[in-house]
Image: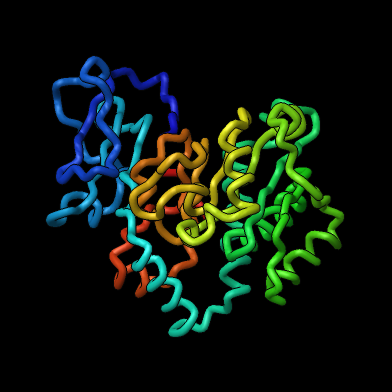
Length: 309
């Protein structure tokens, strides 16, 4: 939700509610902020497929001045998808569209870094040094975290990586080498004294567990990492699925991220996300994939590879 003030155009704020509300839709503003008359269709509202084109469709609501110049628009979140659907999308990209796994990880990692820069612009950071801690797990989400850290370094942030269980996969080793060659420091251990993390970094990127959470969260070193991250007070950015969450049911005592970056499309657990910003990184998806899996992606502004819901 973004404000674009137009002080020269007077008038009350008005709301046009969703035609087919869904659990992921934004609520309308409180009645005190609404005007009784309906708002004319807003030029920045979501496209027609999102505005009540059948059962289960997502709508949108807008605020505006006099129904002509919108000052706030919000497009409903695209429908969340199950773990099986997410796996089917990735399989289709790899097998039918001939994306390489390294290519997908690079696309996602870059998009995650872009989301971090939007959530925490350099001038807004509370500390003089633009430090970010990137905590990586042993599987694909950890590799995405490595790529995210590399791009953050290119964007003039100062990432530090904690990668305690390095994968033997040659592809993941390549991502590690790239970070080392760019002089990104690697921690040998994660401080159990949470205040040390709070004092040293502006934010934490959680790339510990993705869709593989069910198989890994109870094992070391992931269990100890989650126990520490649950108590940090600086913002956490989770990649795709917050570590410790069930991919479909949501949080079951896992961490509470401030920012979520959904890769390709939101997973069902995103319904339980209560943080301040939710980004989707799926602009690269071919149109036929979007249509086949009914992704209903949001409109990406300009040339952006991520969009805030």
